[in-house]
Image 1 (cartoon, rainbow, N blue to C red):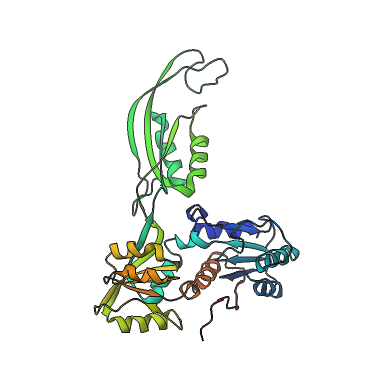
Image 2 (image 1 turned 45 degrees about the horizontal axis):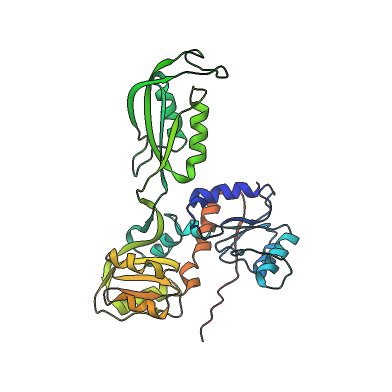
Length: 364
């Protein structure tokens, strides 16, 4: 097994195409063709984690947070980022980061929080836009079924709980090939009319390369006419945050105690109690102040996140309970999720959970 094989499995869970634009995900250090001796999963890649990988004979670290976030102009070991990269390179250890790709995944960071809190009826809080593409092409009528099937097999045509979705219109196409052409139907230099079927299918953005490759490989024409457009439709299965419900609502104090226990946190910073039952809860792992308005608009009784600033608490405006449980605390179960996932995908290979607590924040 090589590094790329592991990356392929991880991209099935959380395609990197859905990571946020500001992020730095993917293979940050190492060679994708390198053979894997062991996989160590961590939340953060620190020097101690690289040492742990060396000790465990793991030459691939799968990290949630990217160790390289801003550009590196020098590698002199003057800070922890440079030292980590230098040590990883010295020991031929590859580092892969999944970060916001997993934040936006349906069964990712926020789904894990919902499961910890025992929430039901889960759905994405802020569905991602511009992730659905539409392909329109024109094919000889007697070859339409073959092309449709090939596109469906490549991943096109899935809409919610339905597959093999397409729209088809019959008509006539015309073309005239020049002296350099090699038409599969008709003759060069003569205008040809062909009975065609116009096929329209939608597909997820991360599948575009294989969809177009399938189109060009399967289509009979020398020159394939097709159009690709990006839809404004929100993707209900991809996006930041998640919202769920308790089967039995609880008062605010009981909710915070439940939150403290389930998320294993020593401290919760929260907004003013509103003296109402907590049933619907929005969650967003990591820094989530940008989602406060979305949580309020969703009708959530509480919003669980991290890194809220002083003035963020004012934005609760007495209609939602804001709970800051800490950045590390909100994402601590992510590495457990990744280990469980990779263990199922790679059954004959040891996936090691890092034993190092990388939380830089301490409580006195």
